[in-house]
Figure 1 (cartoon, rainbow, N blue to C red):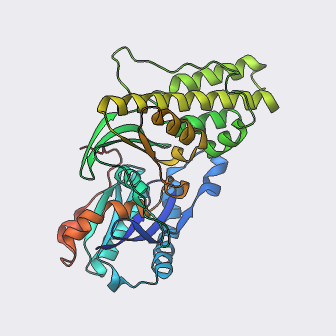
Figure 2 (cartoon, helix red, strand yellow):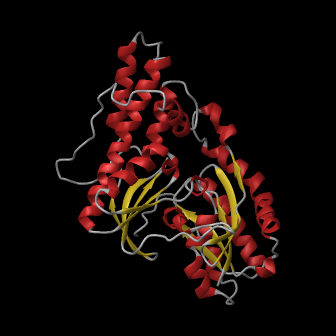
Length: 350
């Protein structure tokens, strides 16, 4: 039973967490930078890195304090190695290296998406432990930087089956929000306003590839929304009120339809009984409801973490590190740990 402290700094959230045995979350503080990046309409990498430097030590100290533990209680330190913004990753990685060396603890590098796929197994003290998906299962990781389907045979045996050919789903939400001057992050803003709109007001198509691939593509949908905005009036005008709500509801419905269609088709082809929905976009209520309903028609169960563990967090990183942490418990720090570098672009199955 390993007790792991993890650090996550792949984008604009500075997070630390202590997780016991890969599932029990003892603490999970997060310092968010949303207010800092909001005025720019998206994450500014240099600002993200600078704010990680400011926030990371206080967040680590808070994780230990909330868990009522000391360094002597830990078996390992885990850290997100990639993918993500290299400058942001390096802040977390360098701090994790230093702490592991100072306290003679093993350092476990973790793939950010492996963390997202593991988040479905997490729970807080006093909560019932999630049943979790059976292996093998299909997992959809959908966020601002990633949209891909995986065939998961075990935590260490994951095969990527599809990817996005252009924008990630969360990126498309952010860009549409920016087109309409609604702010950042776009996902929760669009979801809230779309509830007041008619999802059938605009007919946005779902792309089908000639090669039959189940890859994703959101650039065409984004362009279709821009075309609809331009048709609304002069170039300096954008839809307001009910017209805007209808446009957003139609955009969201088309994005959700594509995600659900690809996932259901992949799950049926793989003949699995369980599907995991993970990543920041998995917070979207319309996606969760539509996905669950569509899968249930084929007796396939959907598993999704609560929203607090869909967005970037360190608990999922600590949980994903559990297997390696147990293997290295008691072996202390290794010189190879200090040679780890950040990886900006990194397939999960490499």
